[in-house]
Image (cartoon, rainbow over all chains, first blue to last red):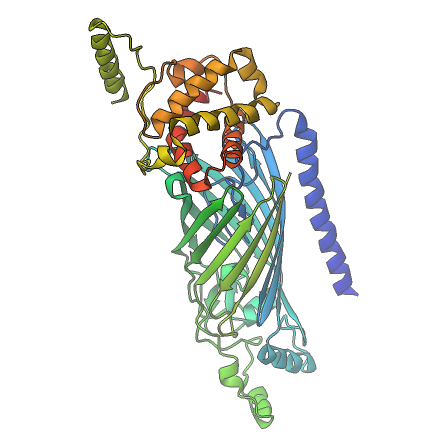
Length: 350
Length: 156
């Protein structure tokens, strides 16, 4: 019952945000509404909500507005990996090709047999560790803002100066218990990034480099920083932010189609640690499971977090909709090794 | 630097006038993209004749676009604009500088052109390339060569 209520609340929330976005673009349609950008030059919708590629935010301001007005967009992205699925619902609004606001709601469903075993034991033992026996969900909200500092990514073909923007993201995990069970420390944190983007017309290619100051585990989906001792968010915890690099390269094969790849450097805060269960000693449970032939010790050890790589194709038949399909190589995620899979995103622009 | 160049150009033009020839003063010079325009670009456009065809298509799409056609209509004489644009585009693609019109900044100074309107012309340019079967990559060479004019054309 509680679950159903939560879900309908969330849907309402999404609908409200969407409606707000629509209202903005309709009310303003007289003067302020603008869709004057050339196709695809605003980028698509990242999992963080900022305009950019798939995972890497670019310096471009999202939406099709030029400096003459405002435009907004909504997007849905679905990621399917062997051990998990993630849905992202988001909206963003671009103001005068200068400033951008964004919001994304993400839901990550874990289908990990080893974690499910723990979840089953935990539910039998009446422990609240944020897991559900058959499908544990990690939710996250991301609020973002981005400001274009200087430069024009598109038209300064006679200079090396790129378009440069600074952005901030505030991320808030919903399932705080599970983040802590998975060894994360903070469940809310901010990230700051600086992005430089330039289109090289003679080679029909867009290049973007982003530096992000963050302590995120898997983009924040499994929290920020790590606790080494227990799962209570206390003890030997740290949330050391660091500078991580991200690169996007998009080659335009036609005015409405781009192919390319991305690389996003990740940290390794939780690698090598065991899953924490409320700070409890796992040995008795491990012993019981060992009788069933399950080696809990190694099965519940967090793998080293891998950098994210992806290859994508973006297609924009017109200025109202674009699609992105991508193949993701995400490396190890939490206790799941070698997560490679597919990404599908729909980006609606008003 | 630019001023030096235009000074030089006018000096040369002045000299040629003095010499009694009838070459008009060049009102615009070649742009200098950081990733240069390949020497084959003009040939891929079909030479000067191909560029002329492309400009005709460009104006076809411009005159159909209600966001911008009125600006061009005000100046009447679309044929003259097509001729001048053919000269300009031939020049920036690596051809000879036979441009007889005003400089881009002088020609657009009082028009209050917005980025949206400029982008509309760029969209017409891509449509014209498609219409004339000019490859997307070749089309982008022309876009790269014309892009620096954005700064003087867009004044609003």
